[in-house]
Length: 460
View 1 (cartoon, rainbow, N blue to C red):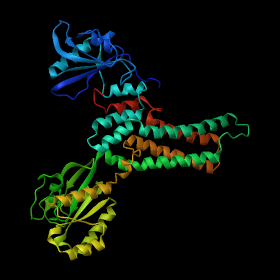
View 2: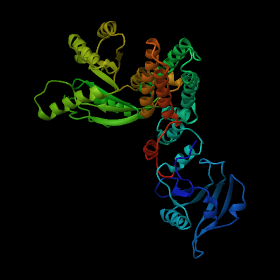
View 3: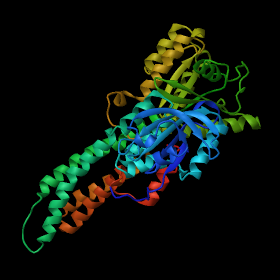
View 4: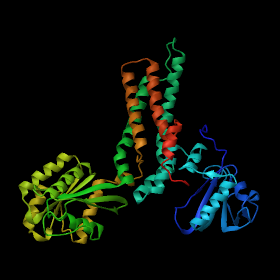
């Protein structure tokens, strides 16, 4: 890949989190990383050591004063993360020591790294493609098992492999049509339009599947905002406390106790869920409670999932059906939950089960009931596809490029059906290739790279 930035300088940054710890790791990358470190290291001559070796010694300043005892890890180009010479200095985790060592090495010729610059250099030097580079940041920020698995799959090339296969198949036909353009005055056909149409239809199936996977990918990466809603005193706060296993919300027999929403996050089945306990939905003249009700309605519209509680001890079936109709009109996936099962007889439950077979009946205070609710929540999210190892799109940039690819491929089909000239068909194919190339970095710009890597932490 053509290098879009100058890599002649050697960069340095702290690779471990800021703050006092047992150790800190300082990373250098660049042509002079080893020679710069060698100037301040007392121990073995680093320039004569092999790659992937570790050496004990001291770091000393210009006055030969010992700053710290350290371990030096050597990674000689191209056998390193950035494919450049890389040195990692493991020192004691004192902020003072770390600062002194970094400032010393800057005086010896290194410069402070920019956010994501180590990963950017790895990408520019061909260590991996752009989608894989972005997955490095996702892997660092992964807080759940599902997010970790998705990022790891992408970093190891699962998503990139899909995109590259699409491009390779399309490039063949693009080259054939470009060849036809070179013989424009002769009646020759190197690329069968029927075969091209068949290929594009096949590609559309794959692209559409990737586009549709984004909803699931977004859930895996960012979690699921889940609103707990229902009428006052239905047991919403009790349920939130049971899910979180702590007394997060005030529980009272007085209707309207929760006047604003309360949020907290837990992980269920490897997926993060942000549960939002909301004010009870009812007509009210209380000004503060009315604001809470309005906020509840707004939260329900923007949620990814709604857990709607019905108080079985006070249920009105006609009113319940009206509320369910309202929920269905929101377009948001929801679970119907009948709470306070311990306060009603079996006849009512059987009647409701007959009308609403998908309704879950529970008592929010019972741990086994809460576990059953968690299982139903996971069913609604539907992680089965991801667990089968299918490629899942988690990045909004990739999603947008896939949408643009889909439109370009549709234009190819439309052009073939309308028997447009080869130059227009070729133009649409080139557009599809362009958008696919943006995902993996075959097609890129300095502005795009700067925007992507600016979101990385310094030191990665």
